[in-house]
Length: 195
Image (cartoon, rainbow, N blue to C red; front, side):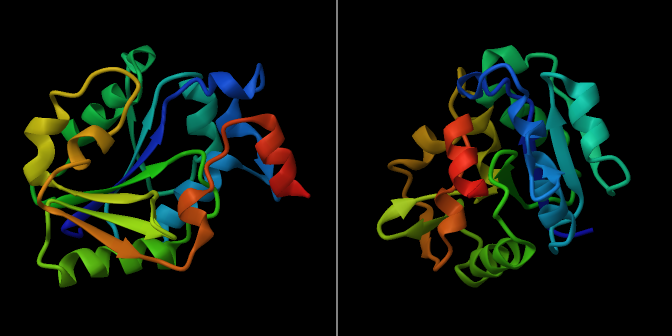
């Protein structure tokens, strides 16, 4: 058990992707969400929680055999905030923070996750630690449990960004990895990555 839990958000519809379920779209022989789940499992964050919702059975089947706790978000249609709240609600008592991974970011690695966790600890366990590249904020983010009450006030299809925008306890952490900006929202985006 680690003081930081990983939450993989894998409940959304991925409407901009079209009729094919985005999280199950193959990349290098594996569904997108499987890449993210494996990175989380191979990191030092423990436990790993996957929040599922839309086509939950299929998404869960794609990450089966991995040591992951499944949390089904019956309110997934309300947007990303509902999945973030569901993940926080499932945290073990010992968890001091979470690292939130988006299910459509297949190039995030376990090494990057561990770098961010180490940076969070080294920065004195701030309210949040956000990776940045060329001045742009990316994902995954580390969120302290002290933000839980604010997370529970969120609504709609937005993550913690609006809380963190002007929060004094946010540390921006420069990284060298393009992966923090590479989420896959459309078929064209996936096609470009495949080529």
